[in-house]
Image (cartoon, rainbow, N blue to C red; front, side, top):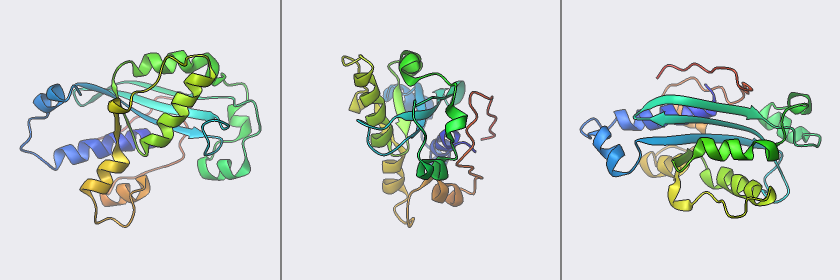
Length: 192
């Protein structure tokens, strides 16, 4: 299961474990009738000097996936070996793909004004905000009040786990998790 879809599953699993809540009403009260789940891969750990090489997003409306966006990007440099080991993304995978600067508007359009859900959201959002600044969109920024971090949720709700990686969460929820399935826009199918 792709990390983005696992995050969606995690949210749905948490939701299903608390059956007495009217989720339709809760989504409305929290302005969460629609939200975007986001995951990205980068050439390193530092938003000011490293680049996004992949982004995967799904739009959820009333608990249903309505749209997906998945794109590899050419960072214009060789992808470091340690990043390839971590992500399975190679320089040749990204060669000839669009540059992030040419797609950043599409990414922001996909996200819209929705809440953004991510696992370790600070990392992903810091890269997105740095990219907006780098590519001449300094007036745009993902607002911190529009971010929901499933890592924080996991630490709070599943405090007894030894760690809160997506792999550990998939084991906890007995879900197959494939951390490196870079689909490059290929339709991804998932059963909740």
